Length: 146
Image (cartoon, rainbow, N blue to C red; front, side, top):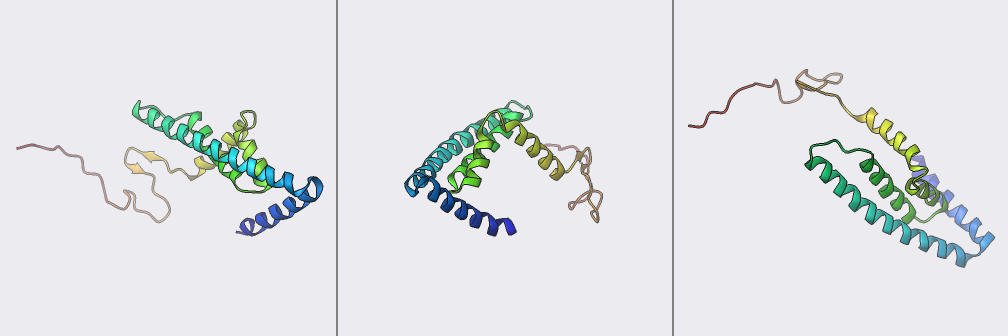
């Protein structure tokens, strides 16, 4: 919550400092260039990630690093669209092939902590949950057409 207040203030402060150092015209040009680059990266990476996900699911295989790379590039492009030097630097780090693997590992650990294990009887129950989930036990049977 604090980041949503402090980050814009810090971004504005840094833009003002940068404007005083290199001039307002150059800062405006850099902001526009970041927005254009970010929108192109976000559009192409988003489309590529979506296509990669569809291809992987249609062929029955698990999405691999291509999906994570697409998501990171999409996020990087969106961060480049946001005006400010901090979001631009983070966005560039997310879209560069040399630094993206570092963020891929962070993304994998973050998603891994949030996933629930799915076993043969359904999701593993959490604290205070029934052993069979909200719908009750699974009844195995056969459908007979008459």
